[in-house]
Every structure is written in structure tokens, then in C-alpha cells.
Image (cartoon, rainbow over all chains, first blue to last red; front, side):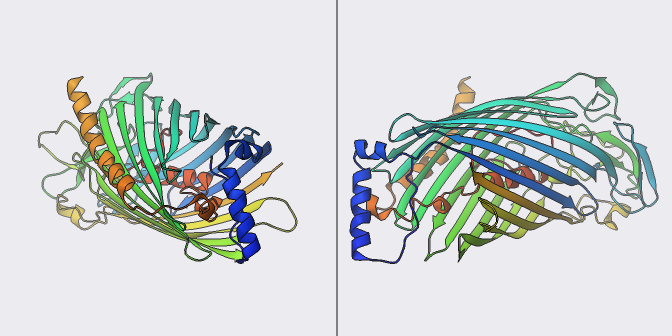
Length: 421
Length: 79
């Protein structure tokens, strides 16, 4: 357990001497035990307001209760609710005329000429999470947790655990962990056969199992600088297809849509990610930087750079601008559409999230302790812009005239409130 | 089974190499009484766990990548 101390104050020989004496005492087991924090309860509340321009809207309130015990253990429970409305791209291509079709959930979808077809949807997701953290010695902390979530067509149940140990006089912390999750996908209207015209093959659930392992290390480099590296490996098995997405069959003469087939993805996916993080304390501010490299067996490679800079404004308030850049390559079976009469591959998707993609996010957080109430309030606003491949090379005929991956503009506002009681 | 083990070993090789380099890199020792700044909550790699969880959820639903921060986490049919 890391000892929480007040931030550095103006230097003074007496304060420095007392400071050194106190911290030296904390290195003695008996003295350290006497310094353990008292039992306390803590509540975090956040509410996400998320909106994509002309697409999906989400409201997501989350509340988390944490009980801190005198011996350093903590137990927390979290409840979250996502209310999702709006529409999302079906994956199909635009046409030179108005397109009308009926979705699997029974909605009649009308798409204006020249615009990518969208499907309306509405869903509510309830998510429950719990976590128990227990120091098993002065240098070792174990954490176990579990989650359950349920929405109209998806359910997830999982457990996870990790163990962290401090080494080299607490200069290094090693973490090993893992989790398993058993999910079930039960599409509205039944599960369609992959790469078919939508023929329903059954109406029950489809299993999806996820296993995740984590190996991480952090190291203190200087009085003001810590770095960390985390590697995670995820194995997904089972139904990994997006049942509502479609792939257009393009007429071989001028690319006009002549039909649609359902999405079909492999039933295994192994994901590997490597995250390098740094926290640096220049003066009174804190700079957070990270870089993540990701690859998976579907052929997606991605690079993510995340920068945050926390500037204290005094009076326990701060501002923290953020900047994030993300880019990914397309999955090996991603296609803008199939050519009429051509032999079908084993797998295919036109989901833009598996295509070539870039995301830029800018925003900032403002945190403060209001005079009229206990606790901390935080407000985070961010703008995200996603851009894909607007003119992919295998688009033909009239498809070359259309913007096949119009930019997605996302606005998100998170309101947070934390307090002890 | 043997092939699966080989795959796991191959996947773990790079993180292990990176961890080893990280552990042996730098020979400076920061004494316990010099860790006042490091002990501050804002010096944590994840100073705002709930904000991070929300961000991860958003990016997971809009991009093809995931992972790096933690093991487990709530499942979602959003992607």
C-alpha cells in the first residue's frame, strides 16, 4: 500500500527534519502499522452525456461505493446504467436513389440517395461490478473482482484478479493478473447465417468466451518521475460477428447496390497490447503520457498516444487538458462491398470500425472542491473526430462519387462527484 | 495444446523483454523520504479510475483495439 502524504510545501529545515523522521519511522513495521488510515466510506458518482452528430446518443450514470477498512482492505460495488438511442451505419453502401429495407429488429430503414444507410436502435444496459482489494503483506496486494452486465441482446458475466508486489525497496512494482468472461449474444429477431441474405438459423443465444492475462511493471526513476509497461493478451472464442451489420453487393457495371449479405467474422480473435506510461511531476503540475501498440489475429494494428497535463490552480482545484491520437489498419477481411458474381470469401465485414481509421480527441477536465458542499466535483468535456477511408481503392462506379466513410463527430461530457462519509 | 503454449510464449516474449529492460534501466535510488511527491494521489498512473473506465468504454465501442490498462472489466455488446 502506498502511503498518501500531503504535497510538498515551502522548504524549511525543521519541516524537512520532521518529514525525514516521520518517513523513516514508516519504514519500521510496527510504526507503519500504527499509521494505517482509519476506516472510511467513499462514493463516486459520474454521469456521461455522449452524443454523435446525427447518430448515437448515450446517457450513462454510474455510482460506486467503496468501503475502506482500517487494515488497508477495501471493498467496492458499482452500478451503471447506459441508455442508448439513435442510429448507426448498417455497413451497406449508398445508392444513387432512395433505399428502403427492413432491419432484423423490424424497423423500416429509408436511406436518402448518396448517403450511407443507417439503422435506428434503442437499448438499455445495466452493469454491476464488485472489487475486493486486500494487502496480504507489506509488499503484496491482491485484488479480485467480478462483473455482470445485461442489455437487450447481450449478457456478460466475468471474474478477474491480480496480484501486485513491490520489489527493490519499493522502486519497482510487478503486477500479474487475469480475467475470464462468459458472454452471450442473442440478436433481436434471431441469429442470421453469416454471408447470407439474412436467413435466420436459430433464435437462441450464441456463446462468446473471453480470457485475458496481464503482466505489468512500474518503476520509480526519480523523485518526480515514474514509468510503467503493461502487456495484455486477450483470447476471444465463440460468436464474434456483428449480427446487424450488412455488406453490399455492388453491380459489376457501375457499382450500384444490387443486394446485401450479412456480416461474418472468424470465431477466434487473439489480441495483444503493450502500453508504456509515464507520470512526471515538473514543478507543481503533473504530465501523463502513454503510448499503446496493439495487434490482433484479424490483422488490425493500432497506435495510440495519450497526453494529459494537470495544472493545479490552488485551493484544491485543477485543470487537465487532454489530447489523444489513434490510428488503426483494417482487418484482413474488411471490404467496402462484394462484387456481383465474384466468389465469396470465408469472412467479410463492412463495419467501418474494422476499417482503416483515425481518431483525434481533445478536451479537458476541471476539478474543484466547492465551498457549499463536501467532496470534489469534476467536469470533463471532450470532442472526438473519427475519419475512415472515404474513397477506398476497391470502390467502383458510382461508389467513387460518394463519401463512404463520412467523419464521425462525437461530443462527450462527464460530470463527476466524489465524497467521503 | 503444444501449439497454443508456443503462441502464448511468443506473445509473452516481447512484454517480458520490455519488463526486463525496464527493471534494469536506471541505477538511481529514490530514498523513502524523497517520495513525498510520488505518494500524492495525482501521481498515480490512473488518478481518475472512473473517468478512465468511461473513456475505455467509449473507445472500445468506436475502435477495433482494446487492452493495456487492466485485466477484466465489464463486457459490452457495443462492439
